Length: 421
Image 1 (cartoon, one colour):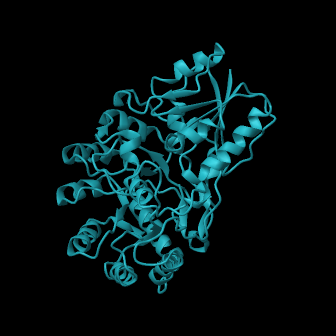
Image 2 (tube, helix red, strand yellow; image 1 turned 30 degrees about the vertical axis):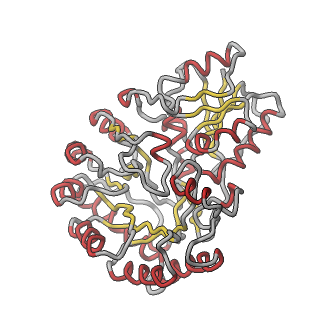
């Protein structure tokens, strides 16, 4: 059976970089597909879809809300040719009912141990309209090494710069943050993979630079420290979401190759200031992730926050506006208050205001988002700040003889505002 797995493109945002990172969800899914299935993968962000290809079954993997409408268009093209389509992934689970209106089947939840049933049903002309395993999480031990062999690696080499590969060490999250859907998608319980399996997968990746995509590594201190100890011999260089704010943990992270972290900066407190300093004291860079437009945000507060970001010497900053994705607390509250003003999923890109802010107009919050970008990068461009992070990882690699020189001069390369993950 020929199965074509497709990752839909999405419109690039203003200032977004031209490079793409290899997607994670599709290759993790690929590891759950039965071995007798001939699976091929197309990332529409970097290659064209061949709609006339001779295939038996098409899967559409969607991570982002801004991918869903394009995913439905792709489904329509294949279905018009008589080819059945199933869709899955984070965005499918968040938009399950709508996705079901555009495809032959939807898969909700995690794929491990489930795909044998799906493909058996397909072969027997008994494909179900919905496979709902969202509340039936598979044993975390069954998560296998992602099928990175499905990727065309040449398409993810940006001007000779080695991009990161994505990998995960856990699923689920014990936190339930206001704008986040993780609790709905993967449960409120932290589910770490067996460390030996995570290390085995990391070691198998032919790339020295990784992005550990877990929602947060700061969920179980002992597990976190054990993971970092086992990572040290790999000599990988990696970025991630928050690390436990503990000198012992940060020291092990640095030894294990921590390059930089994405750290939410949610206020102007001394705690945040000291947290950023502790990362820096351990040689770990920080890209602040700043969410604008919460109900306590006034215009003056947002301006004070930007000044604070400059004071604490962030290496980079990424600004977004609150976006009420379905099945988040933000969506439920704003919907109940009749404050959501757009249901066009193409607008849910985190840089467009799709709800009525409490303390200002929609247009004013949109202007303040631009003000945040312009002000933070006024004295030193994002290109230069990003170059400094790239240079930092090169120096770390040279120190332990893992640096892979490239032919082109890195200093002459141009980087844009945001990386598409």
